[in-house]
Image 1: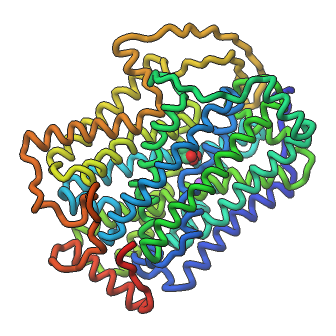
Image 2 (image 1 turned 60 degrees about the vertical axis):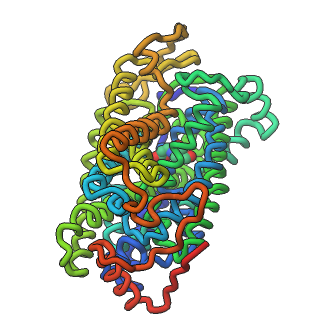
Image 3 (image 1 turned 180 degrees about the vertical axis):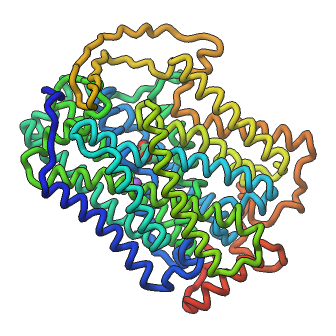
Length: 580
Ligand SMILES: CC(C)(CO)[C@@H](O)C(=O)NCCC(=O)O
Ligand code: NA
C-alpha cells in the first residue's frame, strides 16, 4: 500500500458529479415553477403541510447523515473495531420517544417552528435564547459538512478543494432558495438513494477485490475487528455499550426529537399519523445507513490487514478499489456530495425558517405574505453564503470530523434538548428557570468541552498509531509510524471530569439544563397548573389533548389562523387529522 501515489478521476467521473448537481438544481427549478410557485411562506418553509411519509422519512435520515458519517464511520470501525455499531441500539428509543412524545405535542400545537413551542410554554425570551442556540449549532455544523467531502477528496485525489466547496455551497443555495422545503425534501430523497448506491458499490467491489466474502470475514476475524459488548460502566470510556446505546439515545433525541430541521419535516406532513409513520420508517433506513458504513469499514480493514491512522484513509481505500472502473469513482464522489448537499440544504431551510418565524415575524406582525416569502428566500441565500465562510473556519480547525460533528450536537444540541424536556415533562418549570437552565447548561457544556481539548484526555487511543503526514502540496508524502504506548492511568479530579466520553455530552448537558431549570423554578415560584398553556406539557399518565382549537386570541394564534387561511385558499382539499 502506498498512499503517496495520487489517485485520479476520469472525465466520466466529473460528468457524474456534474449530473448530480444538475439534477438537484433541476428539482429545485421544478418546485419553483409548479404548485403554488413558492409564493407563500407556508409553501416555501412548510411544503404546504402536505407531505407523505416516505419522502419525509428519507429526508429525515438525510438531514444528519452527511459526508462526515460516510467518511467518519468506516474510519472509526477500521481503526477501533465494531463497537460503534452499538449506536444502532439507541435508534429504538431515540425514535420511539420522538414519535410518541415530541411529534404529538408539536403537531397538535400546529407550530411552524419548534421554538414557537418555547414561547407558548415559557416566554418570548426563552424562545429567542433557544433560537439563537440552534442557529449557532447549525451554522457551525454546516461548515463541517460542506468542508469535509471537499477536503477529503482533495487530500487523496487533488480534487479542487475550494472549487468543490463553492460548487456545493452555491448549488445548494440555489435549489434551496428556488424550490423551498419541497425541493429540499425531494432532493433529499434522490440524494439518499445516490448515497446508498455509492456505498454499496464500494462494498461490492471491495469484497470482490479482497477475495470474496469468506476471505474478508477471515481477515476481520484474525484482525480482531469484531468487538464484543463492552459493558464497562466508566463514563470516560470513549465507546462502550452504555455511552453508545444509552448516551446515543439523547443524541438521537436532540436530533430527531427537537431539532428544527426534523421538526419542520414532521410539521410538513399531511397528518400527524403520517408524521409518526415517517419517524418509524427512519429506523430501517438509518440501520441500513449504519450497516453500510460499518461494513465498509470492515472491508477496508480486510483489504489492508493493518491500521493506518490517516484521516482520509476511507477515501484512499475507495479510490484504491474503484480506480480503473469507469464511473464508479464518480458515483462515490456523487455519494459524498449527496450526503453533504442533503444536510446543508436542510440546514439552510431550517435556519431561514427560525430566523423568519422566531426572530423577524414577531416584530413585524403586519408583514405581507409576499414580502415574508421574499425575505425567507433572502435568508436561505444568506445562510448559504455564511456556510461558505464557515467552511473556511473548519479548515482552520482539526479533529476527527465524526467526533467533531457529534460533539457539536452534544454541546449545543444537548442543552436545547434539555430546554424542551424541561417544558414538556415538568409542568412546574417557569421561564426564569428555563433561561437560567439553558445558560448554565451551555456554560457547563463549553467548560467540559474546552477542558477536554486542553487536557487532551479525549484523544486517548488504545490502538498503535501510524500517521500519514500531509506534504506541502497537500499530497500524502510521508508515513510516520509511532507506536504510542498510551499510559492508561486514570485521570483524577477535574481531569477526570473533562475526560467524560463525548457520547455522553448530549445526556449530560440535557440534565444540567433540567436540574438547574427546576431548582431556579422552585426558588422563583413554580408555574401553577392553570397557567400552563394547554397541550404544551406531555401528561406522562394521562392523554395529550387532541389538536388545539383556535379559541383564544393570542397574536401567535392569529398569525397561525391567517397563514392557515392562506394555505386553505391554495389547497382547499387539505385535511387536518385531529387525533392519532
Ligand atoms: C446522527 C447519527 C449518529 C445517526 O446515526 C449519524 O448519522 C452520524 O454519525 N452522523 C454524523 C454527523 C454527520 O454525518 O454529519
Ligand atoms: Na445528508
